[in-house]
Image 1 (cartoon, rainbow, N blue to C red):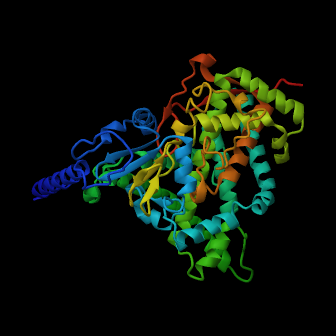
Image 2 (cartoon, rainbow, N blue to C red):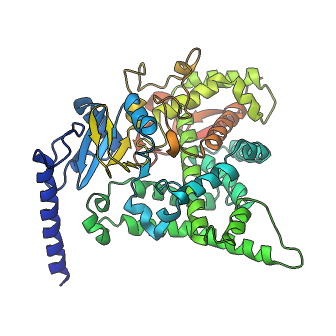
Image 3 (cartoon, rainbow, N blue to C red):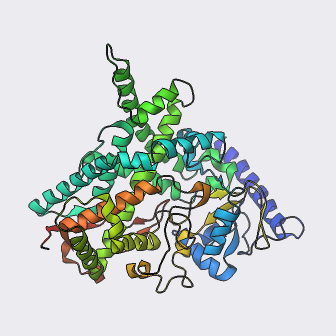
Length: 502
């Protein structure tokens, strides 16, 4: 019986997909002014064009079909913007019409998307979540108030690395940065540390977050052929259910403990952190427990992974190009001296350090393809039609390596951002939009930038570094691994030494 059902389902899929393919090729049956793109194959369309690194594959296709192109991915019409001008059209000019969100089947696990500020399309529910993030977590006032907390977490990171110096052991840079970011967020959310740098807890949490990002980033047949979605042919949703469930279990335990402490008599305990704020609103039925867990999931996954990945890439590039590391360390010594830890206000006086972070974000954008937008209405861009319900991708990776914008685009050259360069990463310059732009810009950008600069400055100011295993800089493995974020394929392990600068 199961074999018969599978056969019938397969035949229906073939007939349905073949009809869609024929319709796409017959004049008058489809949008006549779609952007150009490769001729789709029957059923699968251009799926085989994506490969293991869709950001690179799409960049190559754009060289043939132009800065705005169309691909048929199964049943899904996908429009890809691959230049700064086209990114501006998508993220600014037509921001309102193209600000919808194409919900991946992976994030349907445990109905996470239904209360996700990342995956909800613009609506009153999304606006309320976004307002909560902007007003309670990422405002300048909140960030200023939590400066001492960030300083404390940086001090703990330095202490962890100093312990490695004394024991002569290498440091897993990404892992250490992840634990620091995790504890900063967990103190902001829950007023507690979830892990210490180098601990098994931090490693387990990081492994779960990384698997979530990898599973969500995989090309998924369920997204391209909704008719087979219930079968979950690649097991992606099943895997996501396990990993998201592990995060939710941690959040449930913390919420339960907090509810007990809030109910304790005669003096209920309050921390006045984000969890208390959300529980207060939960009592008025504005946010359910599921909403709270979904929001925490968004914050922890996005906030820890992107920050730690960016720091890992920055250290990798500096070890790969030692003269740049020396310049950054000399700048710190001249402007900060022996004062440790440095103050956040010092960053404004460290233009080379800022240039290193910008160049890292250019070469290794946290999200090489911005999370998929959805056209809420039909839009015309430069004479081409983007049809309603189309998936719209912005290939940030291609834009930030565009040779018409950047000299020697594949090389790490922080100096390109010094002097007269006014290009910033905050969504105003479409040559460099690692955090997106418009209404879907990452709300955590201010905190992420602050933490990356502070962690990088602390590691460079307090220690000298050499590559594990005596590998020369030119022989370093700098390969990446595609997912929602662009991970370093081989985790960076480096040996810290006490700084010898006077």
